[in-house]
Amino acid sequence: MSSLQQTFGELKQHLASRIIGQHALVERLLITLLADGHLLVEGAPGLAKTTAIKALAEHLEGDFHRIQFTPDLLPSDVTGSEIFRPETGQFEFQRGPVFHNLVLADEINRAPAKVQSALLEAMGERQVSVGMRTFPLPEPFMVMATQNPIEQEGTYPLPEAQLDRFLMHVTIGYPEPAAEREILHLVRQQTREARTPDATPVTAEQVSEARKAVSDVFMAEAVEDYVLALVLATRDPLALDDDLDRWLAFGVSPRGTIALDRCSRALAWLDGRDYVTPDDVRAVAPDVMRHRLILTFEAEAAGITPDQVVQRLLERVPVSA
Image (cartoon, rainbow, N blue to C red):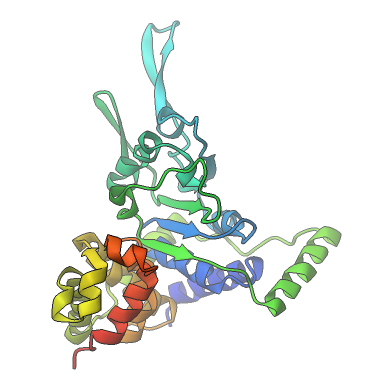
């Protein structure tokens, strides 16, 4: 294991000590950071979604900003706007909150489509265009969006074009009883004692080096074939399973193929390995694919979920020899 892998292993341990009972969320946060993507987290209120991204920001050398999405939010409230300066007689661009290294889009589905689309260029192109000018976003740049699956009144479903720009879509649930007891003890301890300083933050240079190391993780041709087989099965499900053919209207895009490759490599690197196994692919497949599958009306009427479709895919698609 390299020193860089040890650094991120320690970062993972620090985050896990702060975000108790949400191991999957902590791991997916780091995978998304290493794979240079964006994360969509769905879960009930009070499950440490906001706390997780704040904890990550505290352990990175970079700035953090939280945007609370509401129905009256405007696109300029996210990207920024041009302000007229009487002293110079010219317009000056006032940068919006998206110009930060880590951006939390809290309850993103509470804002209308025009605001959600304001993030499209930022997430996809890492830039913001205003008038005739284009402004690059800082590096590293990562958006973590949250949405509440319980309350649907006053919400706007995210368009497929924006969903596809999220590297992973993670769903989280309530912690185990033992973990919840540990949360209680941690809160009491933090109330009584001053919080001790954390380890030295990870620098932007270390994040860049880690991303290069992740891209160099070896993936055998057989594992690459397995990645492609999973994706292609979503586009031609009839060749694999009659039920899948009835359930799937549209499959995973090429962006999803790239995401599955990057996330598999990032997971292997976080585990201290320099090669990808089929188990890595299977571990990240649900979070990479669930938001990229569009189900048929028949499947929705029958109560079929994207997670059930992904599970069927993993059962039916064989690992290449």
